[in-house]
Length: 296
Image 1 (spheres, helix red, strand yellow):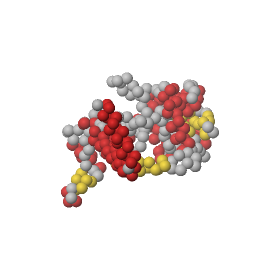
Image 2 (cartoon, one colour; image 1 turned 180 degrees about the vertical axis):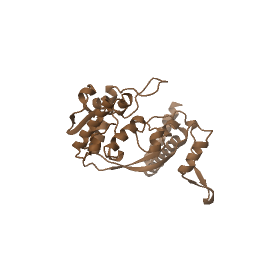
Image 3 (cartoon, rainbow, N blue to C red; image 1 turned 120 degrees about the horizontal axis):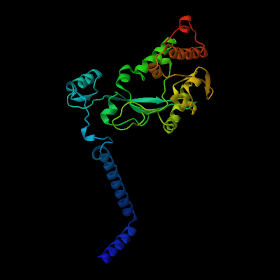
Image 4 (cartoon, rainbow, N blue to C red; image 1 turned 60 degrees about the vertical axis):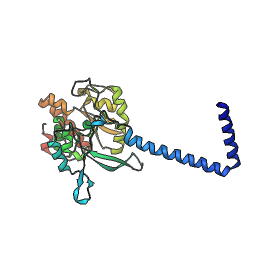
C-alpha cells in the first residue's frame, strides 16, 4: 500500500511538472477554497458556536422593539419603555440598557485624540452580565440616577463643601486612587483600604488623569489619597492644614468626608473648612465674610 502511494505521488508530481499552468491554477483554487472555508468557520465559530464570555451565556436574552408599520424592522428601545419593562418584569433577574457610541479619547501633551468605539449603559449592565469592569469599578444605581459619581452620604457632604466654596461639581474633577473595588471575602460587604500593591498597580492611570486635566490645585481627601499620591504614610493630624507639592502642583491634604460623618464635632469640621479656605486663596477666589465664619 505504501509502495502504491509512493507511485501515485511520483506520477502526480511528473504530471504537474509537465503542465505548470494547470498546477498553478490548481494550487490557487485550493488556497482560495481553504482560505474561504477558514474565514467562514471563524465567523460562524465566533458568532454561533463559541459561547459568549460571560458566566451564564445561555441565560442572556436580547430584547428590542419591532415596528409593525415599517415592515417589522427593529427599532432601538426607548428609555421610557425600558423603565416600564424593568419595573414590570417578573421573568428576568436583571435588565440593562445600552447604546453604542463613538468617543474621542484625548491624551496628555500634544497627543492627537483617538476615535474609539464604546457604549453608554445603565448601572445594571455589569450585574446582568455577571462581570466586573477591567478597569475601575461599576457605578451604582444612585450614581446612574444622578449622572455623577460619589453621591452617597460622603459624596453629598463633599458636594456641600464644594458648593459652599462657590464652585460646582462640574468645575471639580474627582478621581479615585484605586480604579477598582478591592476584593473582599465571599459573603462580606463594604470596602476595605487598598494595599500598597493595589495602589501601585492603579497609579499609572491616576497619573494620566492628572496629566490630562492639568489641575491648578490638588486636594487629597484622607490617608489613602495621600499614600496613593505621595507614596508615604503619615497621620492626617500632621499632614493636613499646610501646602505640599505633587510634581509641581500645589497639594492640600485634608480629612475625607467619611471621617467627618464619623466624627461630627464642630472642631473637626472647622479644620476641613479652614483647609478649603486655603484652597480658595491659592485659586485667588474671592472669600466672603460669611464663608470665613462658616462651619460645615
